[in-house]
Image (cartoon, rainbow over all chains, first blue to last red; front, top):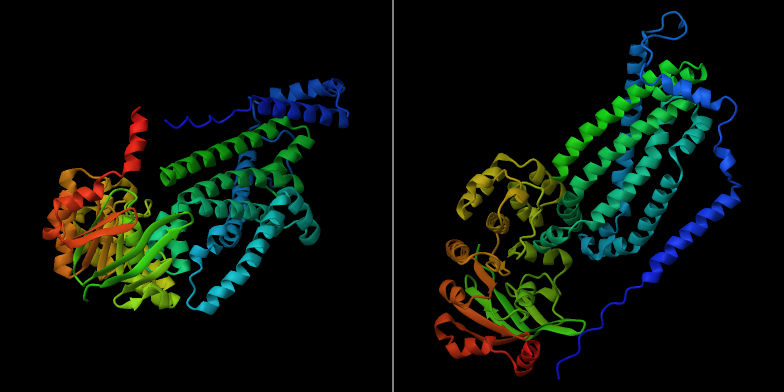
Length: 294
Length: 262
């Protein structure tokens, strides 16, 4: 008797509809809870005029100060470029520290590092120590990563402003901590997902645990790790600019000052500078990324 | 250094629900060239993995150079592995490293951590020359500085062989070295393995599908079927009947096929 065909896998068309309905209900529920009403979208007194005036300056950024600057102020273009430079410097400093944090924590937070495959110490006692200490260290590393990541860079900035005051270290730490946590999480996952064929082969030819990890597994994850680090550098530039609202002299600081003085032409000059900066980094990093990932 | 010797004493390799290799008895002398032949799933790869100290026998014992692998401390086991050049079917190279770096990885088993990192990223002149000589020997001398992912399948296999040779091994264990190449290249590859074995005194064990190729390039055939060794003899003494029995379908396999056709 020919064997009967296997039962086809049942699809559940109801599931997707139910999920869509669930999100709809959640959305409506949130709107009710927040007391949202369409009236909130109506502009307040004079708001439309203000918005129109602001937007009307977009095509004509100021090429000079709109009010007499204090004595000894540089030309406005020089000021914009200097603010852009500071934005990049804060981002780069924060990112370098974040990379160091991410590489060290990511190493401990990767499950592969603690897996049986990589436990290949010199002696039986060092192996059993690794086996005992492994789960504890891994859990601690994961917890630290979650802690660093769950606090936004602006909140870190508030904390460090209170603790350290308005200095460069505050801004650098505010970027480095959450970014370091995110890099650690992603680096750890990339290493865990990297193909194991080469690392198994190294183990097979007598490599120790650390050699198997560093020479067989990490190189396979490295292109993706580099690509991700460049993407985060773009994000760090935006974060660095926004930190200017706290008084660090990045583009955000200049934008805030001019906006408060209603100098919209100046605001647009700084905004265009920021656009150009982000676009330039994006262009550069996408080139480098193509080279790594290709 | 002399070639490695191997011995299986009733070695069994069982995975949950499957016995991949049952009660295998086999002795391979230094410098012998042995082909493992048999249909897919016969246990050829399991046998190679046992010989290569890649996995522990579930029962029985595996001896390499006369030492029972089960009795070795982890560090001693590593040293045994470092003497066994294993050429994997999928080559198991790091595709985004250069060919030379991959070959240099062959020596990590006998290096410390820092030395191995240095030789992969900043190889010395002597190391570069040693690997270049190996690449010339296996026929890809001009590919030294190419990234592995830019090489053809055949070239990758040569890099894998060069990595195994850089181990300065006592044996080459090759899993299906010609499974995915055309007949002309298959002949080339096996001729290369044979001549390497002869000039360096290496013990050579390879799993193969193709009986004609196995008879042409090896001295001894070990036939496997359903996890058991069904014959083990010098090439000249393996008869057509042995080979036919190896690939003959069982009654129940036949009926499966018949029902598919029906």
